[in-house]
Length: 388
Image (cartoon, rainbow, N blue to C red):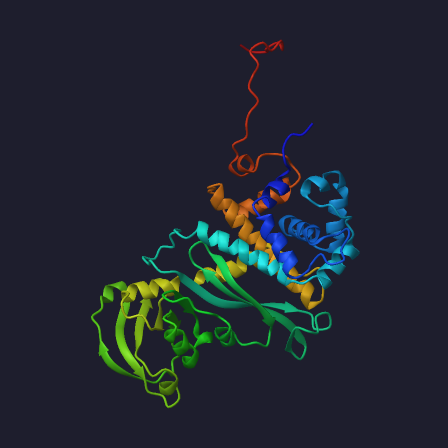
């Protein structure tokens, strides 16, 4: 008897399949494929992310043990670790990157009015990178040091909803500041960065595109103060200045005015100096924006702890990028489900519940809100009662 869809199928239903088919067609992912399609590959890898599988053998054993439910999960091809390994090695990772970007667009529309504790109408992004260490002998293409391999996840995080809007996967040697050459700034948006992205030529290019930046200054910054604005020292703002750069090279790289804000954080007893090209927002708002940059550090910590992106099922560059992009799509999919179903549970809680109930047939909303439908008591029940 059919008692409804299994939980995994209900989760996958939030993916627009016409977009997935377009992504596969764009890169001819199913060219000369008869049995194990790109959809089968994605479903197996998504299952591995949700249930925290450790290896291809682990994925194979778990799915084969539930082979009578594979059809209901949407998996049509035979499950084999060799077949899955070959698919991860050969099939273009851009299929799943484009799918993840499509899900990101959906999630951003859902979280567009999300509050992030800063009074700001414009979009605010945090830009940073995280390094994933690898074994040089196993991943020789991911060059980093003489005895070490690594890859970097360069990520642009939308602070409304903590949705990653841009991800670039590089080897460990690529410096963070080079990502500013790839990034296309949105006019009117704020980009919050740490000192690793301090390059005045690139920041001036961002300024020319009418985007705003907030970045920490280095201690050896050479500048001339043009004038100072009034500040409320009780708020922690020690100075709010309009400056021009006076260094020989920096003055040429950034010939226009900058705003320099010095802020003392009473909680940590630390003093920060910020540079920005925005002259309209209050200084305390600029300091508050930089404080929200910590969200991207929490994002990296979360995905490393709750998704399979520190150890990989394959050793080729294509397999690694495939696994990372599918992991990102699972993260964004959980965020979409949380918003669509109006859940109070955190993404951590949602994934933990899904990991142990993936083959059940409970309604997804009931499962994640604990609104289980209790069986009503039959008034004509013939069972004798021990107590009245």
